[in-house]
Image (cartoon, rainbow, N blue to C red; front, top):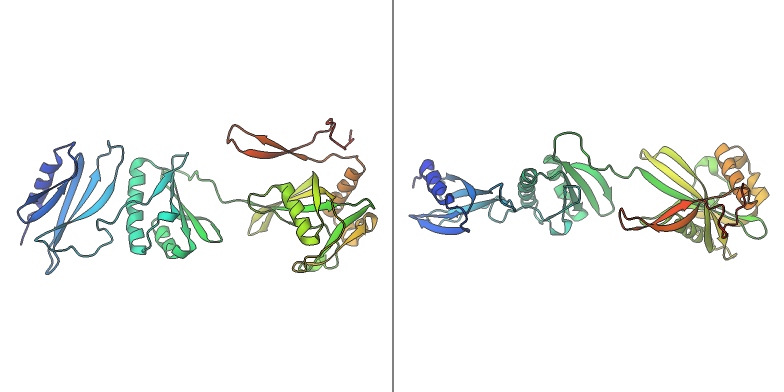
Length: 358
């Protein structure tokens, strides 16, 4: 059987002219075709020995509120079309609009097959470009890691990876990408805990660089995701030494760059009041822990020989003597995001302050 492409185009152009009509189906000789109201229809055909079909792509009018781009298959002489990732099952990826004119692909509704994902991703990119989207965020779970090279081939770039997923992005407009970069900092905390005997809580780490072997230092660690600075300091002291504490102030913080994988580091020294005295060492990461006389702690050669460590301890001692004021945490809510935040600042004149610095 032969079909002239011109006749097929003429046939569908006639049907497409009836704008406003819903999807319909009409028989024309041995050809079963579909028409769409307000749509531009492109048709092509192929003739094969056993499997002949006509592939029709419908492109929704730009004026329509919901533009869709899908590929459908039309049977000729009742023959089933060959299997293709561009079959009627192909559709755009489920995604949510973000507040910056972009889209976030729903990771829970991704297809299971790589070929189908590739087809849907190409259709989705075409749709997002016509809709004027900007940044596209694609989160791929670990179990779908074979999708990563497919997305990269389509132009997606790595943004960041966490345990369980990889995040990729695609910037559509011409010009520089305006999507925020991956997190640039890690955040650490240290607890300065002094008891009523003027002894400071110190630890020796089981795993440390050679320059720190034998050093008695403050309990330190990294804060967790969605954890407050003051809460992280209290938790780290508890985990390493078993001592319960309460947060008083941020005494000082250090900022250094190119630390881990070229990331920057923020390290906050927090003054904490002890609520218990019995030390229970975390054998996994701590070699030893004890209450050490403050003077003995300060006189350690590694403390005296390091200008930064010495300055930190000098500040902590000045705070104990009420000659220095740190930053206390205050809970506030901003109208910009409606979320509760911890704002750290100094309140010298507060009646609740035990700092008398001038």
